[in-house]
Length: 113
View 1 (cartoon, one colour):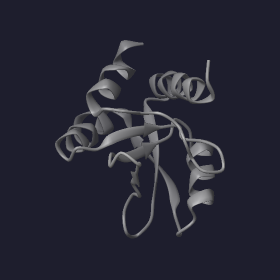
View 2: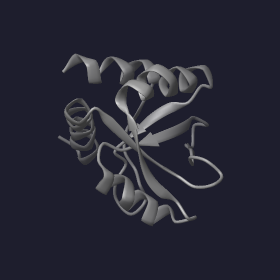
View 3: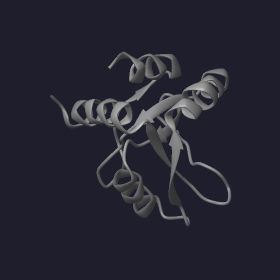
View 4: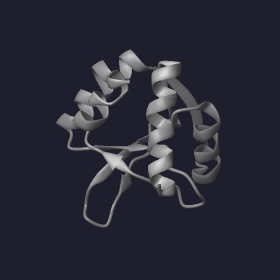
């Protein structure tokens, strides 16, 4: 399994177990990433430690914050789908890379386990 694949598996396992997701944000909101193909990703992590590492890499006074899984599924994922965003999960490494999925794909995974 690739590094991104193992990070994705860990994301869904942790989210099911902890019933929460983690994001990074500052006073301007949550950063998104624009890929080479023009797709914009909204990243989330499955643990506080992972989100804190991302905040440290991105800097810009970012802080890690948790969000209940129910809130994420009921509010954030539908809004992301409406806005044409994909969901980045457990991005890692010095450049914060990893897989992104559509909001529908992500929404269907946590409940499946």
